Image (cartoon, rainbow, N blue to C red; front, side):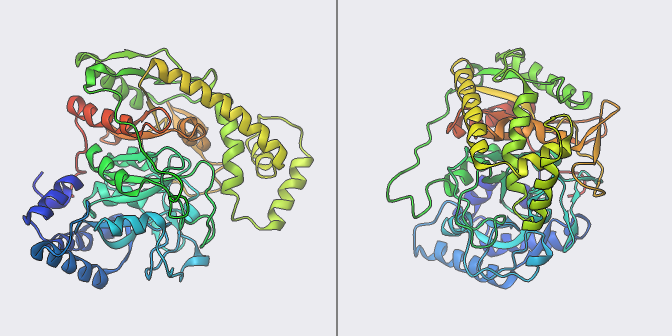
Amino acid sequence: MTDLALRPAVALVAALKKGEVGARELLDHYLARIERLNGALNAVVTLDVERARRAADAADTARTRGLAALGPLHGLPMTIKDTFETARLRTTAGATLLSGYVPGTDAAVVERVRAAGAVIFGKTNTPTYAADVQTYNPIFGITRNPWNRERTCGGSSGGSAVAIAAGLAGAEIGSDIGGSIRAPAHCCGIYGHKPTHGIVPSRGHIPGPPGTLAEYDLGVMGPLARSADDLALLLDVVAGPDAADAVGWRLDLPPPRRGALGDYRVAVWMDDPFCPVDAEVQSQGAAMVAALREAGVAVDERARPVDDLGVVHRLYEKLLWPILSGGMTPEEVAELARVSDATPPDDANLFDRFTRAVTLPARDWIAVDEERQRIRRGWADFFTRFDVLICPIWPVPAIAHDHGDTLLSRTIRVNGRERSYIELLVWAGLVTMALLPATQAPIGRTPAGLPVGFQIVGPYLEDRTTIDFARRLADVIGGYVPPPGV
């Protein structure tokens, strides 16, 4: 790998600290690559060149003159998903209503990467209000997969993943409620980390509406990068209580559970009748399992943290759909309530499940949450016997672009058969509804050359364990590989 832009963030930070490359030099290198590559990919949709150059020049001056202690990201050029409010920089969340919105303040994670010394120079594309698992919107259009431009890059942090895979930025921050960090990492062959829910503040993320202060259920903010070491570096920067909470609590994540790959107790869940996994994805998973066993890792392919994936997914839908309906008008919600009241309580119909979830009374949500907490207790028991669970994030590799109809009516093909598009949420929701950390790692490519990644799930608040396992897994199966032509 000869191009500096394709190196891991940890290597770039080390080179910047040693003076082997300047922040301005590295920033201009990324800008030149965007000029050359971004037109075909449409990952970076807004640039802030002059302000970024001034910040990079200041970073270089601080380093050469020893003016101040250097932060852990000092001088690193970064882009940020266009769902994060960024002071004095257009932030649209892919929504026409916000096409001219320029925030006055930074989101919490943007504050933190700036304070750590990063040079933020642009925003990356997302579906409208981050509400799809493909990346397209009426303002900026479609973001394309650098491995195959006819395929999706995933979503909703699709522009983020493409920027990292194609070497258009040093690091990225995305968000995830339905696999929105993990799925793009899978589609684009990079690393992503969904933190434990609540350890990274969401203040300044859209949705909710601009200025929202409340923390949402399920949703998290986390890094995308070219190595597991990068994820650890970035997580240390963005994790911790927001200012209002820091007066009373501190975050102290435990170290990785094991000190060597062969010491990890690993469970693998490769397939399930409720959400079948395509043979092309399973074959890459099988090769990963074989490599782990060759390395001396004990792998259990029968253990399960839950009894029924379908039951878990139905519960996840009840938690997810009300959040994703936040942009609906009162009139639209009232109409869904009317429809819901007129339909029988039958879980077979996806639209009926959607309408009932969106109009779920608060007292019924309390019962749903109690069921969720019982499932979380089952996960905790599972992790007394295993350190990590490895499973797919999507049942298929990156799909062809499909922006027709609604999410509820689209389909995908799994092993030659049509399945619901919503099945792209099933394996993500398994982990999301339990509020657990998951590190997405590239594990191989299909015969057609499409990346495949699996998620490494760990115990609550044991984010360092999943990232450490991803780091060690790369030693036996390889890690990030640049797409052709970048």
